[in-house]
Length: 95
Image (cartoon, rainbow, N blue to C red; front, side, top):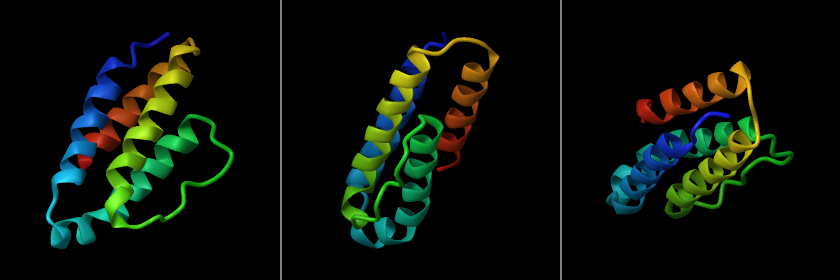
């Protein structure tokens, strides 16, 4: 079982960055943030897709998707879980 603490810390920092962005920056960055949230949700096994609810909620969507993934990883074991965690951390670091 991988430790999801680094994932949660990185996702919260990124979510806070999105929440603090001026609207002009947020408008440019929101599509990438939404895609990240959707990727994190897919990695957690979510059945539906995170909706595009507007640029002002993308930070929250990232945080929620990361928390869902952390719960999934906490219940997982083996190299696949480690790989998913590493990929999620890499994706967060790109933004």
